[in-house]
Image (cartoon, rainbow, N blue to C red; front, side):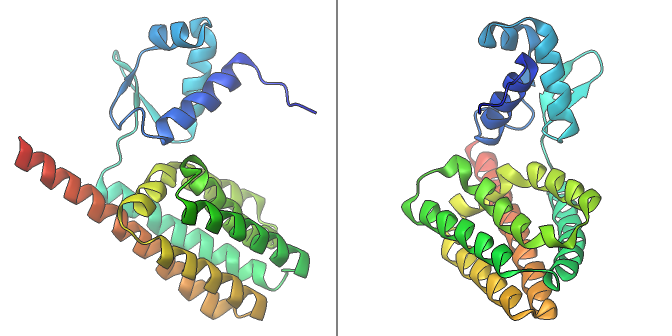
Length: 224
């Protein structure tokens, strides 16, 4: 059965994909009147959609200037990924003791689809969704809904940067290997090894993203 969406939900979902897909770069002004024409709706659902995206960290409002896509600095990216390390290792440690064969099989099934998408170079828009779905399958048995809500929000904010890291650092094979290692340690019930690998996985992804951003900034300065 199809899920009914309000106009605001539809606009928020589509605009989220456009932002995460790179159509709107960080710091781009999102004019409500232009978006209302684009989606053939009034400004009210557009405003509601922008408020939703603000709560997810993808949009920010500036007084007297309107809404803009969020532009994360290197220091903010590092903070974002440090928070992920703290929360995700905590949840994984709690989850491992409760993981069932069904949980592990679900995580493996998601990982197979993720591998196929990465190796084919297709479904780029879904890469980060597969990434979070895999991690979420391992974390869910911890039964920490409030912490998972925070992790979900952090992953939404990280989405474009995770995809950027995979696309531009040529480390797809490394990411795949780490995901399979994480699943193996989870199957073995080895919380210490799993959490150590997860911490390294998140931290190195962060540094890969920072390197991409710093190289882009350097290139732009040379071209100026």
